[in-house]
Amino acid sequence: DAGITQSPRYKITETGRQVTLMCHQTWSHSYMFWYRQDLGHGLRLIYYSAAADITDKGEVSDGYVVSRSKTENFPLTLESATRSQTSVYFCASRGVDSSSYNEQFFGPGTRLTVL
Amino acid sequence: QQQVKQSPQSLIVQKGGIPIINCAYENTAFDYFPWYQQFPGKGPALLIAIRPDVSEKKEGRFTISFNKSAKQFSLHIMDSQPGDSATYFCAASSLNTDKLIFGTGTRLQVFP
Figure 1 (cartoon, rainbow over the protein chains, first blue to last red):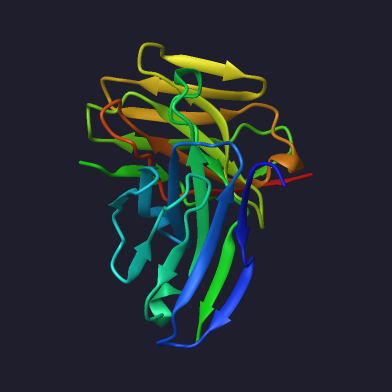
Figure 2 (figure 1 turned 120 degrees about the vertical axis):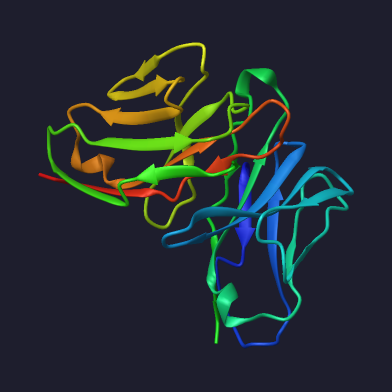
């Protein structure tokens, strides 16, 4: 599939379990981002990556781990899930073309519930 | 200084009305101000964006008004339609950062 995809779309897990959310893009975009969306908080950046093997923290990175061994993939791992991590998670990507400066393209989201 | 404050949190208008969503920022280094539109169950998508060298940008029924001195910008939707019902996010960014800073979102409902 062309574009940006996320899997799974829905996930229910238990407190303390490790969970990995997958993100894949086919545009060869340099930048990739993970956000969480919660009512009243909007979209908050968890982690981002400027290129393969380069990652940096966002404003809500505690409890999350990312990796980027390939340009097209950017998995997000919750090392030990907590109820406060129940949220909708969005992956996004963007290129470096100046004509689309900073436009981010979002995936369809993963709804995660931690019981 | 990194915050973008958005209001109102929700908005209800009738078809044909002109909803207005407002955002304010503090960081004077911001030089790119996009609006994203999100339909239920979907990811956000870029709707329209403005740079601070202009005070207004119009694309179809959507207009951004920008006030650099007040550090505010707003989205106006002319002749609103039920299909415009969505959540709208403002955001801001600058040349020396890779990140977008998002507002908290406005849920718009347009009734027939």
